[in-house]
Length: 546
Ligand code: GLN
Image (cartoon, rainbow, N blue to C red; front, top):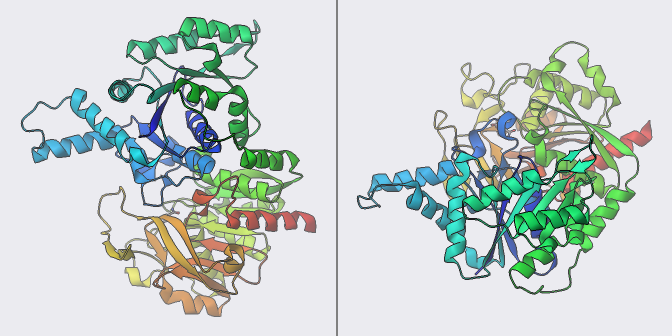
C-alpha cells in the first residue's frame, strides 16, 4: 500500500504547491521510490476543459484524454510519470458522481450529505490504484480557510485516521512575508495558517516556508515552537532562478529526508540526483540567447501557455542557450505594417487556440515567417492556419478557411479545415455531434502518428511511429493534399489509418513546421521534446547568420 503525502497551502495562493509536490516526487524517485501525483481541486467545474485559459491557465491533456489542471504538467515534467485521468478530481466531478448515484437509487433512501457521502467519494478517489506505487502525493488546490475546500480537508483528515499509523503525512506550504521597512521576516501568517489547519483536525508534519530571503535559524525555531512542528521539518523555500533547481534546493533543505523520517522509512538507495545536476549545469552554462515570438490570443496570462513556455526552455537547455520569449497579441497583426515588428525575432511560434478572433493576424504572421525564412512552428490551430495561409497564398485556393470560422457558408467536405465528427480510438469508432456538450467532445489524448521517411519530421523524431497528445475538433482536409503538395507543401505524417494529417512542412525553408498535436505536453527538462530542440537550434542558427 502506498504512503500518502498530502500537500496543502496557506496564507496566500500561488505559492508553488504544484512545484513543491513535483519536486518532492522527483526527490523520492531519486531515492528509489515509485511515485504518482494527484490533484484535488475544489472548483465546481467537472474538469478545467471548459474554463477560459484567462481564468485558469492551460488545460493539460493526459495520454488517456483527460483535460486536467496545469499542475499535472509540472508533475510530469519533474517525474516523467505520465499523468492519468484518475490523477485529477474536482468538486464538480465528485458532486456529479454523487448526484448520479443518488438518482440511480444507490444510496437506498439515505439523506445525501457532504459528510459522509461527498467525503466518501473523495476517499474512494484517493484509494484508486493505491497499490501501484510506493508514494501517492496528493495536492489540495486552493488555500486553507476556503469554504469550498472544506470537504477535501475533512476527507483527508478521515483518510489519515482510517489508515495504519505511518501511512499518511501532511505537508503545509506557507509564506513568510519580509517587511523591508523593518528588515524582518514575519511568522505570524504561518502561525495563523497552521492554527486554521488544526481547527479542522489536521496537524502538519512538515512546513514548507516560502520566503524571498534566507530564513535564519532563529525564525525556524520560532515557527517550530509556535506551530508545534519539529525544527528539522521546517523547510525553507527561497525564490530560485529557475524552477528546475527546486529539487536540488529542497534536497539541500532536507525535505525528502524529513518525509522519510516522519513516515519511519529508509531510503531505498543513496539519492541519485544526476539528472537534476545535469539540468542545473546546462542552465548555468547556457550562453547567449534566441528570441522567440509567440503570437497568440491569451498572451496576457503566461499560465495559459504553461507547457509551451516550459518546452521552449527545455529546447534552450538542449542547445545550452537561453530562450527569450516575447508574447504578442495576434489581433495586433491585423493592422497594416505590423508584421515588420517581427524582424527582430529568430523564431516565431503560433500555439493552439480556439475561435476566430485574431486568426487573420496569425495568418499574416505565418506568411511573413515563410517569406522571410524565419524558423516557424505552428501547433494545432497554428498548423491549421499554416495550411490556410499556404493554400491561399501559394496554392491558389483564395477562399481557403476553417469551418470553425465560417460555420454556415459551406458543408464540411468543402472546407480546408473541417469539423471531424467520426474517428477511430483504440479500435473503437468515436462519434461527435457538432452541437453536443462543449466539455470533453474533442479528439483528446494520445494518438499514434506515422511519419514518412526522408522528411524533416522524420529527421527530428528519427522514428516512423510516434505518439502525441491531441486536443481539437477540426482537422486538415486530406482532399486538398494533392493541390497543396503540388505547390510545395509536404504532408509528412498521418494518423495510422492515413486519413488525418499530423505534420506538414516546407522543404525550401530552414524550418517551417506545423503539427496537429501538442508536443509541448510531453517535453521535460531532462528530455526536451525533439521538435523544440530542433526549433530552438534552427532559431539559434538564425542568430548566427546576422
Ligand atoms: N480550434 C482548433 C480545433 O478545435 C484548434 C484547437 C487547438 O489548437 N488546440 O481544431
